[in-house]
Structures are given as structure tokens and as C-alpha cells.
Image (cartoon, rainbow, N blue to C red; front, side, top):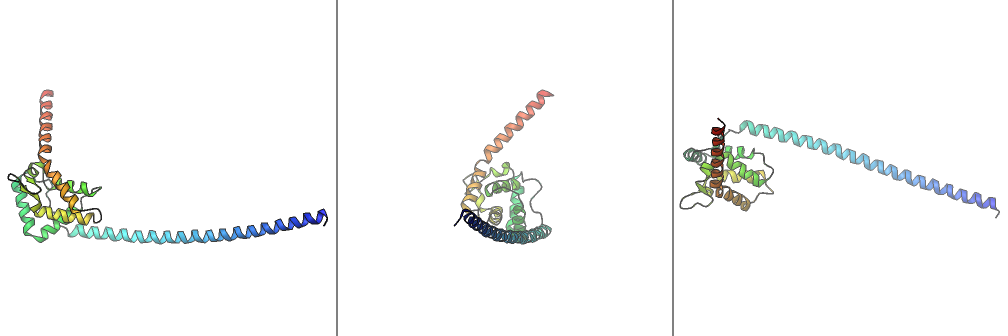
Length: 202
């Protein structure tokens, strides 16, 4: 075989290989295009599904808000006898109890622990909280026996179905009442200092 024949033979082989490589690449690109198209279709379907779910959630939330009667006061209870009257109403009325659960669920909190603390602060001030403890003592009433506590626990489990536990609820509530007196003391000290500063300025 002369040099020219060898050169032509090698060139043909390379050309054939290039064609095969190109066909293979073209086939892979077609396959990739199809996968991208399928992914886009799935994304579009998912977006439509999410949109429908969000619309249903908004609709449910709107209906729940319309049907729910506001039960908590605009400001937390600052007097023990006012809260006691409220507790009696919750205890004696299933409708009011359910209204309270629904209203507590509307509280926006980043986690279950914060939710419990925020909920108690919406119910009463530390002036009232200080007369309670979780289990109760000789000088304090048991918070765990309150219907309000039962309603809050129910709202807590419904709002955080996977993260909420009875142990955490009780621990957080116990700490809330345990430190009520100290929080109240600090608030009074702050207000006294603020009043003193105001008198000095005047």
C-alpha cells in the first residue's frame, strides 16, 4: 500500500468516526432536550398544583376567619377576677372554647416554643400570671387545670402537628409562670426609673 492510499484510508476512518461521534452527540442532545421538556412540564404542573393549594388555603382561612368569633380581649387581662370570669365562660361553653382555640391558632410565631409564650402573653399580663404555677402550690393556683390551658394546648398541637410535644408545652408553660414575678419586678423597676427621669427633666 502506497502513502497516498494509507492517507486516504486514515482520512476515511476519521471521517466515519466523526460522523458516528456526531450522531451520538446528536442523539444525546435529543435525549437531553426531551428530559428538559419533561422537567418543564412537571414544573408547570407543580406550579398549577401549588397555586390551587394556595387558593384553597386562602379560601379556608377566609371562611374560618368569617365564622370565628373573637374571644380574647384587645389587651391581656391585668386583673385576676377579670381573667377568672373569662375562664368560667370558656369552661362552660364549648363554642367559646372552640373560638378560643381558633383565635390562638392565628398567632404568628416562628416555632412552637415562641408560640406558647406569645399565646400566654395575649391572655394575661404578669400581674395575673404570677398567681399561677403549672401544678399549683399552697399560694398559687394550678395553671394546668385551666380550660384556657387546654385550649392553648389544643391550638399548639394543631398549629405544629409534627414539632409539638406535650413535654415541650408543659416545660415552656412552667417556665412562663415560674418567671412571671421576676418579669413583673423588672417592669416595675423600669417604669419607676422612667418616671424618675421624667421628673428630673421637668
